[in-house]
Length: 393
Image (tube, rainbow, N blue to C red; front, side, top):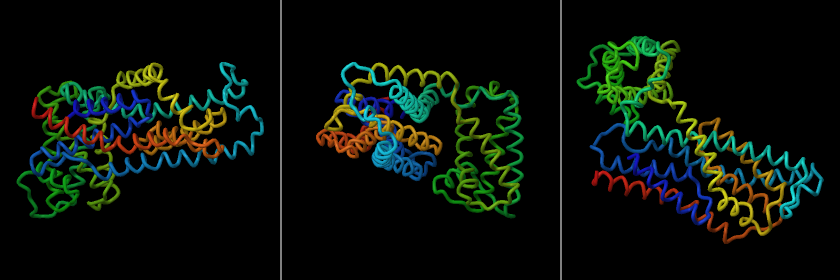
């Protein structure tokens, strides 16, 4: 799954980069994840709970990717109008002249906006890179990275204590005479169908108890045997998905005190399975910086010189970058992945339209075509590659 996702994303990104088309790595990554998810669901046994695609989350991501370029276009156009009303200095609205540097205040403005876009880009796209690396690590070396081995030394004791609290809270909502034969299967069915019934409450309470009992003999995460790590992660992850049905979907009405116990335990569960080592953060930051330094020219030429019929002016660049910085920063705060490429390119197009410069429709058409094809092509590539890899390996 991981290698199919990677190969599909790399193939599409390299192809569009070679052609100088600013296609979205975010779209590519989302499409590849959907593709392997669909392929996994297609090939998984009937009734699997955690295979397939979480379409609710996928639709939120798709909406953010669709709306953000429109925000970039119109907001950048509006900002350029406002700048022309407030800042009357004509130097700001001139295109660069050869190697002549701009006035110091324009240079300072552009350094600020470029730095802001870079920071916002790193904060949003960096999370995608870190998530991808963690997918690889968990898939290739699960014994080392399936569970968070770097929390506080007392973490496991706190987890066990939270587990006892949530068991007691769930026990208040167990109806007399209700039993389940297979707790894990019942929890899987609840997660798969996103539904809740009396059996689910009993099943989740039992499943949490059994999972914690497996970890009871060990004082710290480091002491957990390697042959137990993968199963423990799968169990804890499934419990986390079931808890979402309580504290997010509100499918089991609970009193505030009991809901707090569930929320606290959910945080402990997420801390065990959703973590990023420091070295991964550093590696992604370096990769983003070095990749931009090495491969910037093809895309920069397209964005700066080929979207509009005239060269980008200082004011247009500042407006597009300021809008991109704010849009991506807001999306980052909301936990939504957006495309820096799309937001910035559409912002440049918006400033060209507002400036009356006109657009090079051949380039715009190629950009729109690349944007439209990225998602379905990456889905199809990842789907086919996953099926092939499963058959070969």
